[in-house]
Length: 354
Image (cartoon, rainbow, N blue to C red; front, side):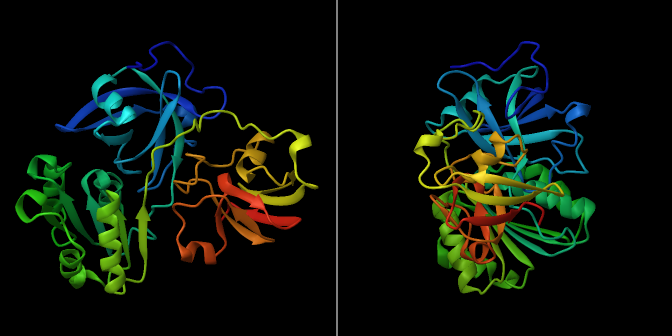
């Protein structure tokens, strides 16, 4: 099994990603561990994050392997970045993290990304988590309770009591913030797998929440989202993670000019308050074009499976080769995944600044 980097590599690595030191490894349950990262001062802005976002972590070795893991730490509350990883049967990276990573190791990571973020810390939220899906929810819960004025209902499903990540800390939060956090546990060992009907009955009293967030195993999320739709919850946000097949830390490899089909399109990109106008080859993903031109466009998986690279089309049209995360409402508003976007018109404008 590959081991983490232990050399004196500079904290700012060449190319995408940065090398961060693991300050501590915390055992949360028999199958879950939290990695506490130190972020040097020169990277503090680059690693600023919002509750509900994630890091992409690279396992060293060949072939490269990377996975996205949600941040369980809360911005403005914790002084370190923390990701919590649950062991997956046969999972290459999760088992390596749980078995091999030690304090003092360096891991290559991409900056925080993701749109699984509450609209306001002052809103009343309904959070529906299964298993390790609690990780981004824990960040959201703590942020709302410690920095906002909203209240939270957390429905949390697990295999058994030993599998409940953050069980004691959730109890402490409820005691410290009476009336603002309600946690409802569903244990498969007690009442079986959570069905759509069971979830619908459990969630019904909270259907008026400002937004519902769902994260966990795919069958659980399907049942939860179906129940929430039946209850006419106005805003439902789902976080899905897929195993990455490529290396998002590699430099973009644009197709050679002779393979470009037809003349390139022109794209105007608003990024970090500046506008950039570039040629966009018809068969090159927008993200690769931006990164190759030296622009610091956000990204994570590069496979259409996360939404870290999402941007909004404000003029022209694009096609996506893959989309596993954007909902119909997102598409209607013009959101696309830059890593999967190809130009469908000769002139296109997109923005990252919304």
